[in-house]
Image (cartoon, rainbow over all chains, first blue to last red; front, side, top):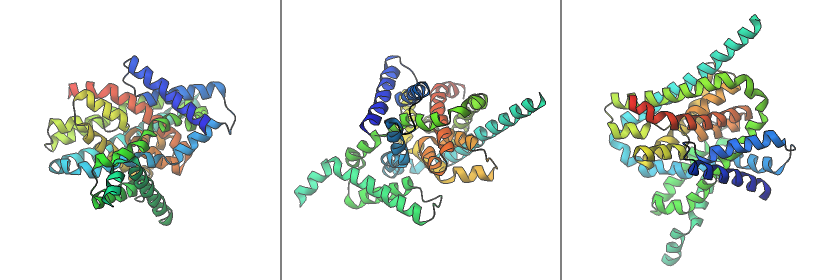
Length: 120
Length: 234
C-alpha cells in the first residue's frame, strides 16, 4: 500500500512540478498519469504489484473524492438562481452534443477503418 | 457542550466523517435499489452532506477543513487512471486515429454549444466564461477559469454538475443512441463528464472506465488549449 501510494504521489509530484516550471496548460495529475502509464508500459509490473493494488483501491471509490466539490453545488446554488435557465439549458445541450459527437465520431471512424481493411 | 462543538467546527474530523458517512449511505442506496442510475453514491452523498451542513449550521468553508482532505486524493486518483489504461494498452493503437479526431472535435462542440446556448438565453458574458471550460476535469476547469478571470467556485459547481449528469444519464443516453462498443462509450463519457462519469462507468465495466479516464485526460488538455481560442472567435 505504502509502495503503491509512493509511486502515485511521486508521479503526481513530478507532473505538478513539470507543469508549473514549464508553464504547460496541462494539469499536473494528468501529466503524472501519462508518466505512470509510460513507466508501466516500460517495466511491465507483475499482476499483483503494489502500484496496481493501491490504484485499484483508489479507483474503486473514485466517486467519494468528488463529494467535497459537489457539496459546493448546495453552497453556491443561490448565486446561480437568476441565471438558472441559461445555465441548465447550456449544461444540458452542451453535454448532450459533446457526448453524441465523440461517440459518433469514434464509431464512424472505427467502421471506416474496418471497411478499408476488409476492402484490401 | 458548546466548547466541544466549537472544537469540532475547527477540526477536519467532522468534514471527513460526514463525507464518508454520506458516501457510505450512497453505496447502500445504490446496492439496495439494484444500481438505479439516479442512486449514484456521489449524488446521495452531496444531498446527505448538504443537509447535514444545513442542520448543523456549518458553512461550506468550515466543511472544507475536512472535505479538502478527501478532495486531495483526487490528484493521486487521477494518476492511478494510468493502471486501467495500461491494462487496455493493446487496444490503444487501433483507436489512436478515431480518438485523436473525436476528442478535440468533442471539446470544440462542448465549448461552442455551451457558450451559444447561454448567449441565446440571455445569460450574459460572465456566465459564458463560467460555462465554457465545464467539460474539463474539475481542477483543470478551475485553472482555465482562473486564467479567464471567471468565478472559480461557480466553475467547479458547473463542472461537477456536468459530471453528475454523465454518471446518472450518460450510459442510458449512449444505449438509446445504440452505441454499444465499450471503448466508444468510455471515450464519450470521459469527454463530457470527466472524473465523475469515469467513476460511474468504472464501476459498470473496466474497459469503459479505462477509456473514460483516457478521454478525461485528453479532453482536459484539449479544453485548456481550445477555450481561449474558441472564445476569441465567438
